[in-house]
Every structure is written in C-alpha cells, then in structure tokens.
Length: 122
Image 1 (cartoon, rainbow, N blue to C red):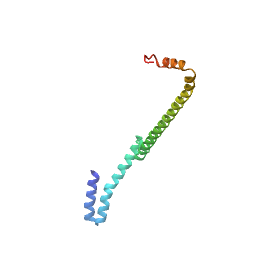
Image 2: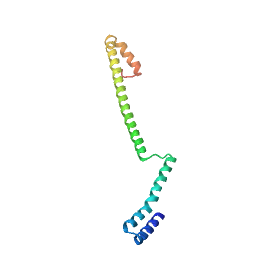
Image 3: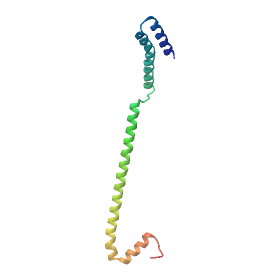
Image 4: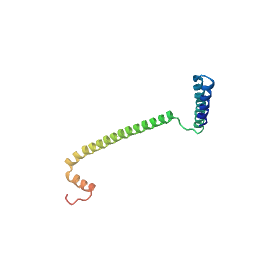
C-alpha cells in the first residue's frame, strides 16, 4: 500500500517538476522496487522453510505417476505369468491323469471321490 502511495507522489511530483516519462519512470520504480524486494524475501523464506518450487513439485508428481504406471505394468505381467503357470500345472495334471484313468479306472474314481469329499451321487 505504501508503495502505491509513493508511486502516486512520484508521479504527481514528476509531472510538476519534470517531463511525463520521468514521472512515469519514478512511479514505476516506486512500485517495482518493493515488488522485487518482496519476491526476494519470499524466495529466501521458501528456501529456509524448504518449500518445493513448482518445477520440483511437478517433477515429483510426474515421477509418482510413472511409478504407479510401472507398478501396474509389473502387476499385470505378474498376473499373466501366474495364469500361465496355473495353466501349465493344470495341463501337466491332466497329462498325468489320462493314463491313470485308462489304466486304473476304479482306483481313480475312488481317489477322485476322496479328494473332493463324499458325494452321494457317485
């Protein structure tokens, strides 16, 4: 507020004593000087308080998004691997079951009943 008062005084005095360019220049200096000092102080205080700049915040957000994306890709890849392992295990079990069923049908039937629990319809 005081800077604007000083700018007004500089403008009024400059118009009366000098030319308009000088008056406008001194009025601008009356506002710009405190403005630059204010920016300097905010920068110093920001560094003291370890507040991140906008660029640093955006870089951290970008890194966090990239990490989330990488994690999603890794989880998807792991799910696909797990599904492949389960399918391979089922195929291997079926490959072992087929000869057993053909060679020992009664034993296989009894083992199936035991492994699934007692069922009345068998």
